[in-house]
Amino acid sequence: MIYKDANVTYDINSRRSDGRATNIQFMTQDTGSAKLSFSFTKDGVPLPLSAVDAKIVLLYPDGSFYKKNLTLIDKVNGKAEYILSNEELKHYGIVKAELKLYYTNGQALATSFFTFTISKTLEDQNIVPVAEYYIDDFETLRDGINQTVDEISQTIEELRKKFADLEAIETKEGAQIKADAALSAAKFYTDTHISDTTNPHKVTKGQVGLDKVLNVEQASKTNFDNHASDKTIHVTEDDRNKWNTAEANAKAYTDVHAADMVKHITAEERSVWNAKETTSGSKSKADKALVDAKAYTDEHAADKVKHITAAERTKWNAAQLSKITNDVGGVSFAVNEGEDMLQAIVNRGRSMGTFYANGKAVNSPSTASTRGFFQMTSQSTDGKGMYGWVYAMDYRNNVFTNYWEGNNVGWQGWKRSLNTDDLLYSYANITLKNGATAGTRTPIYAKWGPLTLLRGHVKTEPEIIFGSIPSSYAPIGGAVVTVPLSGTGGTANLIVYENGDLKIKYPDPTDSSKLGGGYYIDVVIGFQEGGTA
Image (cartoon, rainbow, N blue to C red; front, side):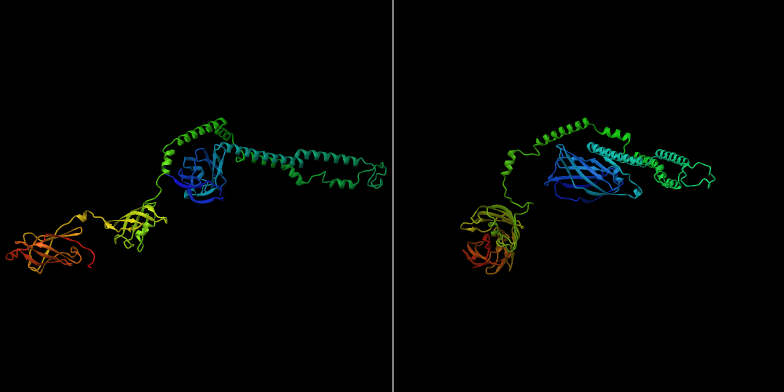
């Protein structure tokens, strides 16, 4: 599967955090591929998730709320993940998310929230998300339903109070009853006034042509005016309209509340939620999780690959702790130009290690840079090495050794070790000069370690330079060796000059008549280095 994988790391601690904004961005068309990967640590090590029910809480910009299970992919190393559903991806904008870990022992941990973004693709520019609420945790769902029931109860109580207020104001039937009563009272009053024969208006019989009518008291005009202006007995048009519309308004409010599917659930939804979990089913799952966790823990505890025995721990703790190289396999230390290579080794005390030395370091065995190792087996009271050795090799493949006796002798001096090249040699022809010729054997030369080798039979006059070899093959200061004469007994001196020239001097034949047969130059000459005294 291909995912847009966004990694979020949590270190479980009590430090204050106001949440954090990430640069994670998903698109509304990332169907099945928008994945959040989580790593949990505590005190610098992975936080085990073997006995944890992990949840993610998502709050979307449009008010949608989701609480879903995390998938635990590596319980030992604290790894979990969550893949956003297609419905969740429709709620674009900045999303807040937090994680909750519920342990089987009743403990719980909540992380600080983080944010990420869901952006609309071009084809989704006109989508309008609908607020949704999704909880896949039974206990949380039950709490949510209880909260909804409390809200409904509160709403009903408010309606009851409003209807009580409306009843206190008036109903249509009540108003009609009161109006009928007022009409009856008015009629009674009028009838009474009509039947009043006390002549309240002091009208004389003569004035009304009733001079022959009995003088009975009637209701006064003031009484009629007071009755007409009495607001207690009569109602205004606004009052009448208000009372007439009260029932309709109350019914409309009730109808809106009854149709509100956010506050209420359908019978189908109630059936689905009731089927999510039962007490026995939840306990069965919890018991199985406990058994699985114990089995996993027991298996892990018995794993001899991941764990070590007491004997192994004792063995490892007793291992040598002194390092011969640095942590990445390089040398223990380096000696730079102008620094004393041998003193640097002594200063390290009783130890064994490796080093690099510049060719211009003091007391270096070679003008070429060297690498090697050393060991000091004891040390003095001031912490410096007392006895030890050093082995060095330059980049020309020459090997040198030296020994330190810190009590009296000190360093005994560098010695170069012979190699196979030192023991190999090959001959080259001596360059003959001034009329000299080869006799029965061609004159040749070679260098073998500290020795210069000459061989051959040469015919030449004495006291002249008869040939030469390279100056690098000639000893410093030259050399004089005795060679035999050819054709007669006797000897002569072979002179090897420092520049490589060769000459015969002082021939002393046994029979001078046979002089001229030549000279055998089969000699070995020590190769002296250094200057002449």
